[in-house]
Length: 164
Image 1 (cartoon, rainbow, N blue to C red):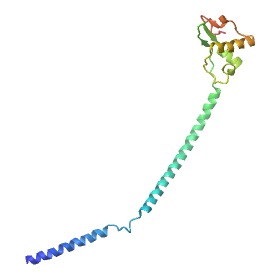
Image 2 (image 1 turned 30 degrees about the horizontal axis):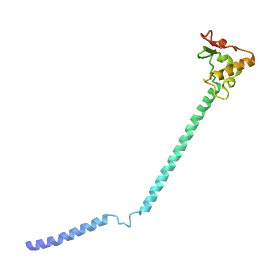
Image 3 (image 1 turned 60 degrees about the vertical axis):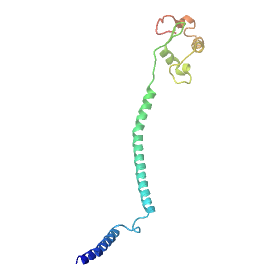
Image 4 (image 1 turned 180 degrees about the vertical axis):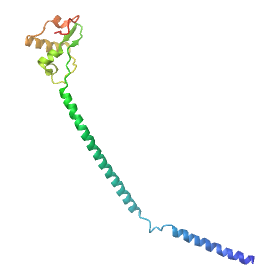
């Protein structure tokens, strides 16, 4: 009887094992039901393009908003800059022959910036001796106004802010 039971068990085990393998194979998808790699790549490409299009749309909208906010500010800055003039009362130029005090505001109002500054943007400028003498003395002699002698402009101690 033990012999018969052993034989029955020996026959039942392979049969049960084989049935369980068939059930596992039935659960796994067959290669025919899996989507092809190309189809999966196309789906991924479409999704990527959709995200990129949405990003471009969002970026464009953000750029438009920024442009609408920046334009009025730029207009205000330009309007303010057009009204802005910096006037310096006087300029003191130190040199070995004595300080030269130039009444800048008076000269700017009378002659304008280009007379002294030329095409350059008005601001501090470096003049050498020859250039300063040609510009200042030349103008004073031509207009027959202002000092032309050395000690009239070059003052060891500046007597006033009016200078030459």
